[in-house]
Amino acid sequence: MKDLSNKKILFIICGGISAYKCLETIRLFKKNNAKIKTILTKSAKEFVTPLSVSSLSQGKVYDDLFNLENESEMDHISLSRWADVIVVAPATANTISKLSQGSAEELASTVILASNKPVFLAPAMNVQMWEHQSTKNNLKILKNYGYKLIGPEIGDMACGEYGEGKMSEPLDIFNQVKEFLSLKFKNKKIKALVTAGPTNEHIDPVRFITNKSSGKQGYEIAKCLSRRGFQTTLISGPTNLKINENVNLIKVETAEEMLRATQQNLPTDIAIFAAAVADYKLNKKNYDKIKKKDNLTLNLEQNIDILNYVANHNSMRPNLVIGFAAETSNLEENAVYKLKNKNCDWIIANDVSKKDIGFESDYNEITIHYKNPSYKKEWLSLRKKSEISEEIVNRIVAQIN
Ligand code: PMT
Image (cartoon, rainbow, N blue to C red; front, side, top):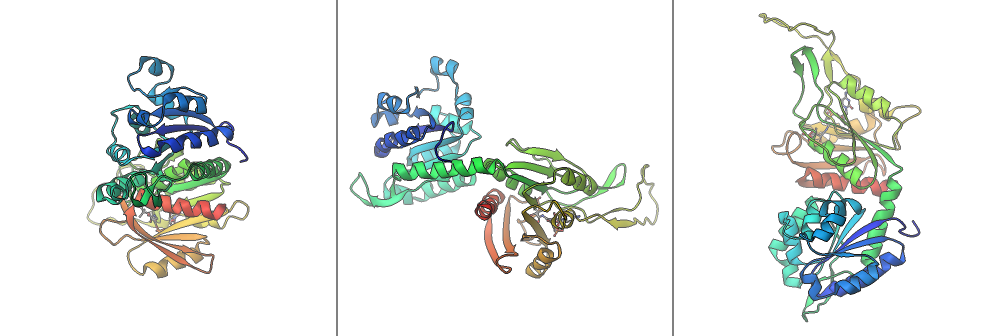
């Protein structure tokens, strides 16, 4: 992307001494043809004037949640929907704290709370404030929401102290947002397919065989892919989850339906199989409810392995095929076996015998086994499934670019 034509940036300026750097940052975006709308918090106006911001951005400055004129022209929801990306600078300790609490006290935080767009924070504060445990905790929450940090840098501060907490330079902020936008728009041409959740295999009209998969891991991966711009299709077994992102959600019940939906969505560039597909189904359909008897034998037959089918497809094998391995023992050995046996590029192993990870939990701990380079493995310690998904998608982006 040579320039940022038609890319829309909502720039939120908060109250900190480095607010002056935002003027230069806005100038760089404008010079590269981006469309800019700005919000100034009340305290930001102590550092930069609405007039200078408006002159540089060549647009109106929004500042008041309860301004009738603003709301009729562009309300807080429209502002957040308008943007491709939101940049918050300087992200002060106070702003970071408010955002982590989901505050909707004034226009800036309300717009962010109402937004479904990527949010970049360029923190700036005194070194002690930056290192304070409360700031660390708040940032952890925000990172978990998928907010991205630019900086801060180490250096001399306006307060006279030295350390980490200095806001990144305008060119760094500009370059990081530009790089993100160019990848996002490049990714738009890339199709990703994710399977998630369990499957139900009917015993009779009212009973079925299933497993404990909640779908959380697969849904989080699909959300991340979509946020990064990939054309994402999520094929989901029965779950209670909802997905608001721009994801093409296809709901299925059985392994057969999941296979059919997968076939209908080939070709795809990337395929990630996080679903816990039932390995077996009944070998004959019971149209009536089975009556209680002393001994009941269920005859099962194997379901087709969807991952295996896709990874070995002659003409439509995706460029990147990622399987999961849910194991209760011999994690590494079984995972590597599946990597080779199912012809995957990566297999993501999780130990589902451990309490609080894997099935149902909000957390997971994984090892990624790569076919190339030569069966390298990488361990990602216990963290939220949303964070695990960010890490997985970071690696996908790195690989395909
Ligand atoms: O859904 P959650 O509650 O968030 O839990 C997440 C999870 C534990 C389900 C997830 O992290 C996970 O491990 N998913 C794979 C579960 C599984 O069925 O693993 P497996 O080792 O039995 O299967 C290996 C791979 O083959 C998986 O990618 C699976 O999707 C795929 N498979 C298996 C059988 C089949 N018939 N078709 C398949 O595609």
